[in-house]
Image (cartoon, rainbow, N blue to C red; front, side, top):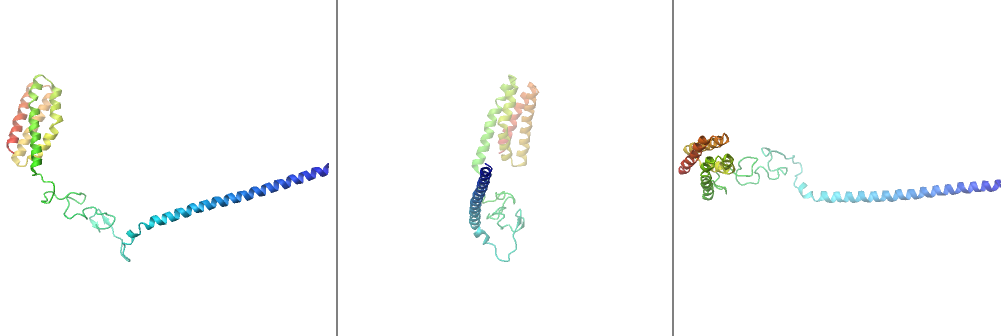
Length: 219
């Protein structure tokens, strides 16, 4: 019985040893396979990076041997034709620009596509003044009925276009003076309506039309 127990113990020990050795062998195989896959991935990434860099070789070929680095600070200091600028700051423009930071030409350039003397622009601005006069003619009825909200709304929803048109059309000192008179009449009408002063609002509303007519006639 003792001999059988000893033999059984030896068999168990041998079995455990073999099992551990087999597990170790399988572990080594798994590690080798994982390492091989990792190496393959690294190799693929290395080849991809090399191919990506090769695509930019023509750019690097533009650099001459022994040439100092070229740079530009806002296109004003250094070499404005360097690749870092990318033809910015007017280096690719045939004519002078409005400023180093602009893509538009100088104001008043005869070759410019935009000209403020274009009849189409002038007609558009004068049409705004005509529409403004129609809207101002609605004010007396609003004021008579004390519809103050209608008065202030009428003076704000379209008058922005009116101010822009007058600033565009008013060139001479006399025209600018008449424009100021019109703007003051508008402001007085608006203030009187907010204060619900009917008499002052009616008087100012009448002034808006007369001062607008005076400005229009000077064009």
